[in-house]
Length: 145
Image 1: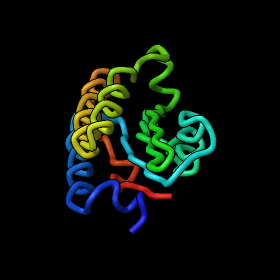
Image 2 (image 1 turned 90 degrees about the vertical axis):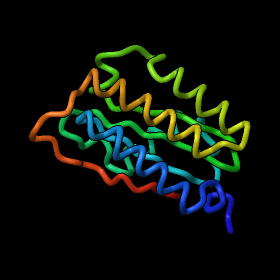
Image 3 (image 1 turned 90 degrees about the horizontal axis):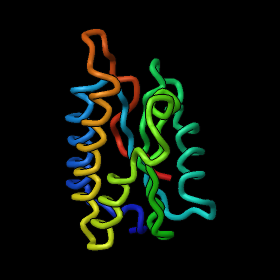
Image 4 (image 1 turned 180 degrees about the horizontal axis):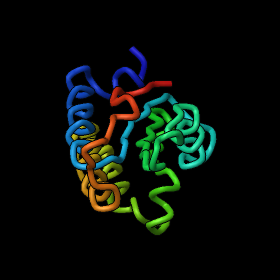
């Protein structure tokens, strides 16, 4: 198995997906996780490329958030769409990023992702509360490259 496949077990992937679904119940925001082997670019730049490749920029309120992981490179980034950044500052995700990196360093990959997804969901809830006409615009499945 590759490092990407070993990063999360099938059961752990289900925990991450459940965290995404739970976080999205309270917001119109959309959360995705992308895992790939490595990146030769800065993680935030690669996250932005993946964000566009996954068409996360096409959400109605431009409120998608991508958790990007490059396993072999040991790189991580959180990237959000302009609807979020228009209302926040550049350090908006710092706490969640540190939470994930801290847990990754302890080999607690799923715990770090789940906790950070929950926190991001709370932040999105304040900026983009759930509305009755909200639709799940993006897949909750973990993408891999």
